[in-house]
Figure: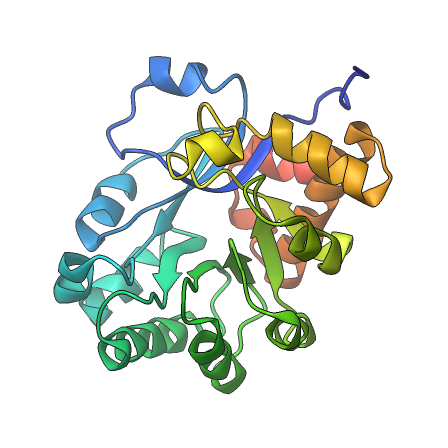
Length: 254
């Protein structure tokens, strides 16, 4: 197996990590850089107190978690954006009332308008309604997490300028239909560990090998491409300077 680019660690743009994670547990991630999304405002509040060299913490309101929707407060959410450059996990989910989820997400998108942030967006079972909302309220930092829309919906998302965080559990036809220049890696740990092959956040080995084979490139090229995509996305959204110092340096190095 060929050696990956020196100095570029594994990148995971959507995983769940408890906000009380210890330094020893972070060390066990083998140097990976992880975008750690949260599910509830309470989690986001605790995560907002942290400053970790390799973790980028998100401010999330998971649409499939009723207590997260219940606890959402727009002004408190706006306040989290002063210290966070990542909104996630937010979006729409097939579980629960669509109108309620849509109302919360519309407020989140309004708060994110003109803000230097990335948005990790969930769309399970409601890809069409999510794209409708993003068409009305677009943002340059949109990242569609584990997006399983059909061909028409995929093209709509590409036309909106969205990026896609993908994992090894996704079907080949979707992985090959998305532009390589718009892909970012994810594990969504701990979800679907058997099918993603991810033993921990940042464990993207299976994804790198599979995508490299599908796209006819080397794993070295693919990892560098991921970091280049992150650089392009964070540059256009003015997020690059808000990333932890070493994370920004790796993006610039790619």
